[in-house]
Amino acid sequence: MTTETGTSERGILSFLDRRRPVVRVSVAAIGTLVIGGLVILCAGPLFWLFKAATSTTTETLSAPFSLWPSGIHWDSFVQVWTRVDFGRYFWNTLALMAGSLFLGLLVATTGGYGLAVLRPKYAKAVFAALLATLFIPGVISLVALYLTVIDLPLVHVSLLGSMWAVWLPSSANAVNVLLMQRFFANIPRELFNAARIDGAGPFRMFFSIVLPMSRPILGVVSLLTLVGSYKEFLWPLLVLPNPQDQPISVALPRLQSSIDFSQFMAALFISVIIPVGLFLVLQRQFLQAAGNAGALKG
Image (cartoon, rainbow, N blue to C red; front, side, top):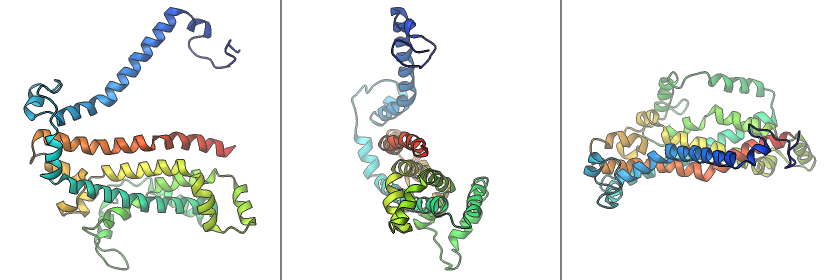
């Protein structure tokens, strides 16, 4: 049954109900309350963290919810960046994230391309092995992975204390490979058949067909890889024993007892704003990935 608007959508309220002033006002009020509540729940803690970072320690401890009684103080950000050497931890974090992103995308795209497009005879065995790794908790393989890092097989080189000890394990992510494989499998096979007729090889199809059509899923995997690398704590703590090489996630607990409260709040705010910024930049890819996956099936 269609309404006056010409659509067949149905809801709790009919088109005639929505025309009543009382209903319109009630729906608008409820929507405003829901959106306002979500904004308070999501942005409230981040705003308070910024307020605590730009207030003095005494003001925050005596009146936690007062808004800058003596004005905004930006000294905490400057001091935590220079005196505490927080900038070194920040650049260490960026280096870890960049390396994990590059190697993670390299493994995920090539692995997914091989399983979904090239499809060698052993593709099913590799696919089953990837699925099997998802049932192994990370804590169980932690000791074996650590022993592998301190004595790399074949070459017998220790990666302890180097960025490679974090980059290589983070790049071998079965979830990212499976995400890529599912997305690549939805690309019409006719495109690859036509490319083969035109003389395109596997590398040409990968760079000219697969990657240009996979920007949404590349954005999703990139965000998952960056956030996963950013929040990792235990593994960088084990393989990067030198404090000068550690990222923010490892340095923050150590700094808590050695700096002022307002400076620690400033360090927390800097550490929180990084993943928030990444999500704001790449949030569109999440929506496009779901939409494009359904479109490719058609």
